[in-house]
Image (cartoon, rainbow, N blue to C red; front, side, top):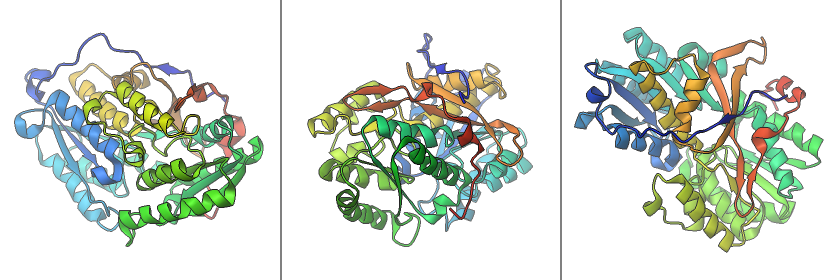
Amino acid sequence: MKKNVLFVAAILAASLVFANGSKDSGSKKIHIGIVTETVSQAEDDFRGAEEMMKRYGAVKDGGMIQHITYPDDFMSQQETTISQIVALADDPNMKAIIVNNAVPGTAEAFKRVKEKRSDILCFAGEPHEDPLVIEAAADLAISADFISRGYTIIWAAKQMGAKTFVHISFPRHMSYESLGTRRQIMEQSCADLGLKFVFETAPDPTSDVGVAGAQQFILEKVPQWVEKYGKDTAFFCTNDAHTEPLLKQIAKYGGKFVEADLPSPLMGYPGAFGIDLSAEAGNFPAILKKVEDVVKSKNGAGRFGTWAYSYGFSVTAGLAEFAKRINEGTAKLESSKDLFECLSVFTPGARWNGANYIDQNTGVRAKNHMLIYMDTYVFGTGYLPTTAQEVPEKYFKIKFNPNK
């Protein structure tokens, strides 16, 4: 089923104003809180907040943006995360709070924020909590389209010549409705498109082994997996911290990589391929070209893919831009057109597809939860038209089974 018309991002003619909050909004001062992971957990989300501070200034400098990060081990420090988010509401000028990724505890934090300040907009990027939970607390939630991508990633893997698809994850992620459902759709898509589906378990970076231990596991296992399943195998992992070591070992030992869980040319590629992008910071066309040149030079053409623009970066910055425009009266919360225009500020020329989330049990379409995705870009080959694919109706009817 074609979910929705394509949203084609346009390059905005008008330049953005690099000004502080009071100048941007006349006499009404606007502060926007952005909460992200640290650089080690999800650099792109973090950089999106930095971009907004460059554009509109940090609150401490008289600007608009207040950026904070939650602990890397957020699962064991959930109350700390909640307290950090809620504390933003103590600022009388705070008009919106964006959390990306919206890790467990975000819904409770938003509930407490609303009890203190019902006027503050609460936006969740890539929520980790069940859809109904975050939808009840957030004014808007944005997720990578786990329904359509469950099919399109497998379709793209086949276009890239894969015969086997290895899905790497761990129990915490598989307990999430979004990630668990996508895994089930991927397995069914493999059966339908003629690929072998394999599930491999890896350590959770938020567990006792930490990020370093989880990454070391991937470094050790990938050579074994490539030998076991063959070089015509596409690998996929659900965790950002696993991505860099996975890419590094695929480049060395063989295999394919369609795109990251939250795709970006910055997601794993710089570290895996030893690419210095400091001179290209924030310039995604330049970043894409430099990454592509290096990947091709290491015999990676046709084997590695991404989104041309960072999903995490675009969601962090796009939601903040949307909140800013709503507060200034130039956008409406209920307008998907206005939302996509804000995302498009950070993805000029890219093609998006998306639609509102539909509850698996009731069939009710959520007005405040959007699922979005972009075309896959294969290094050395170019774009695959993933957003133009007809996703078969049956995949939308696959219900989450936490025991799978």
